[in-house]
Amino acid sequence: MDVDLQLRVESLLARYVHALDDDRLEEWPDFFVEKGLYRITTVENFEQKLPLSIILADSRAMLRDRVSALRHANIYEAQRYRHLVSSTLVEWLGAHSVRAISNFHVARIMHTGETVLFASGRYLDRIRLDGGAAQFEERIVVLDSRNVDTLLAIPL
Amino acid sequence: MDVDLQLRVESLLARYVHALDDDRLEEWPDFFVEKGLYRITTVENFEQKLPLSIILADSRAMLRDRVSALRHANIYEAQRYRHLVSSTLVEWLGAHSVRAISNFHVARIMHTGETVLFASGRYLDRIRLDGGAAQFEERIVVLDSRNVDTLLAIPL
Amino acid sequence: MDVDLQLRVESLLARYVHALDDDRLEEWPDFFVEKGLYRITTVENFEQKLPLSIILADSRAMLRDRVSALRHANIYEAQRYRHLVSSTLVEWLGAHSVRAISNFHVARIMHTGETVLFASGRYLDRIRLDGGAAQFEERIVVLDSRNVDTLLAIPL
Image 1 (tube, helix red, strand yellow):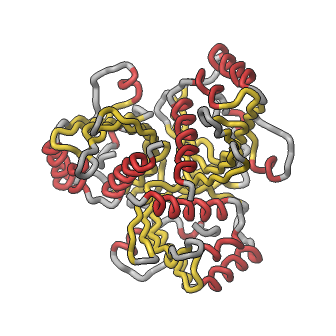
Image 2 (cartoon, each protein chain N blue to C red):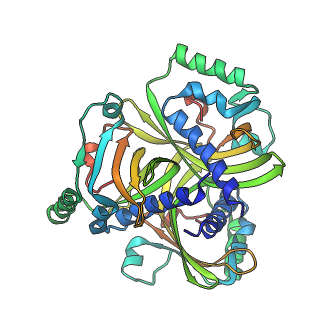
């Protein structure tokens, strides 16, 4: 059991969700390496290996563009997310890279106060762990439900 | 604080829920020792020490039978589960056996995409930890609600 | 990565939620230091630094009074809570004190069996870690929704 590795990965995952849930979206791209891949897809698409994505970005620059769009367009109704993450499994892929799989539930809280279980699914991550801070090389968000896409405003 | 023990137990619990949520039900019996006990009950029955169970199996063979029944009968509507597990407390029971208590929430996602908080409760586990892989000697699933039983198809 | 610290804090948080979810409310005040602060507020109040609280107690004695009131008044409908906690970030504040931030979801289960995602938010904790057991010097529960207050009966 590589205790230190497990907790370093869990710490990255925790810092990520707190940045989103606290609406510190400008920090979001920095959780990825420069050429990092971020993709949201559904479990149906993922299992059938369909290339369809709800969101796809393959660089930090694209993630920054997305944050700008969210900040300026601001067309979505005021809402908050609250992520819960558990059951993280970690394994080495190479000397400086690990694979991590986690489950998540996300609550959405509308400005009216209404709370719903908005999304559930898995995070499939490839994480770079070299001398510096741990960062995502790839984060694939596999949603359990195909009903979520039209509602997606904030990153998951 | 026995860090290594804590994370070994959490790893077993994580591998278990990923097997279920990924529909790898055939792997489910192997999380138990040969004469392992698996029981789903409600908190009312559990607190009153009633022997009533929603599901009861006392061997890996019975769990395999249950998987076969689920695979062949297949009468339930297509659905997925997504388990979140937290707050795991672990203590030694003997040289090769530990007690673990955890909380869980389970989301159910119907093929229509509808997501609901389906079940909540506690896992009360006795886990064998000897030279080999950690396995459940006993896993008692205590549901908070008595309304769940008629809906139970996939294991929890 | 201070592995031992992380798991000591997670253990405190786990013992706390099991005490509440098991209805062992009499143990609740002992999770706090004698002059411990417990506050439930909403994210709107918290972000605007408003002093408004849904619940505020600044000593173990006040927490004991609250437990007595809950036990004797008993005006609320029979219900259970099930807490999930994740994404705990820990940092030292001083030689014997740490800051911890966590996310939570709470399910409420009515005596009819109905289960809803009742509350979500963050725990903002200051925890004393000296020779003895870890205890809360301050626990601020920041709710995401302002609709929760009229329903609050059991502590969070």
